[in-house]
Image (cartoon, rainbow, N blue to C red; front, top):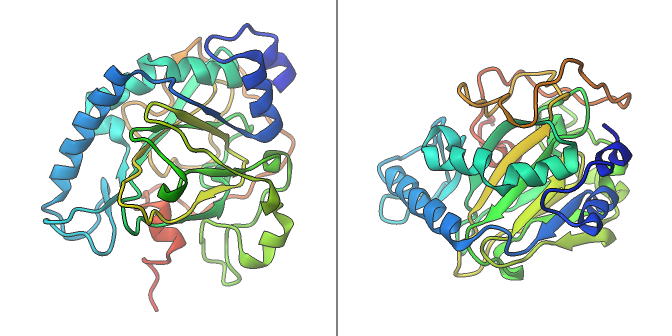
Length: 298
């Protein structure tokens, strides 16, 4: 569906101005949308996940660890596919207002794709370099969007999510390097083509959500503050969007589930081409490891 067709449907949660802002900028911040009851439940299970990571000495398919992670000082970068690790995460992804927000921006028929929980620990939590999501998991169209939920208050010092306004309507960038290796971020030589003067940082209290389109150039700085910045990310698309390639963070139980509306009988194909990533059928640890080139032999 085109933005014009989507806007013909009455909104569930967002105002007309918020919907239009998303389509104009490629991202949106909505403050205080998620109530304290949900935040308390999510924090409780998230703290359990952190406790589970203490006994690990290296990253695995679920827990992505910072290099200086220890049992006494656990520093998770990412919890992969949280919906598969605890039922509260799936309840939140499928039954909370998140799916209604997605319907306001992709149309009434909404498909769940995947989720992750990025931590960005205090005093050094790693940056996320400028990148575009859709080339990690290309689809037949560009409806996919990511909804992030701030579990803590987030200010400028904690590495809030940042988006480049209007970049979703610009080019898709090559996220391979000159040697043909996937780096998952925009190359330094291509950054002058990104109007970084249009960067906006999305700060807000716990319970705020960030939304960004799959083509939007986005990233975040390191967290040098004494406070963490866990960000729970859920990815949805219109039901008529179908992936071209393997889902690198696939949930065998939930990926492809229709969470609002009904299944699509026809695929919608956007005429704009999309970069194809490496074969992710075996999965990968995380965007962080790829961007930091941790898995390369040197």
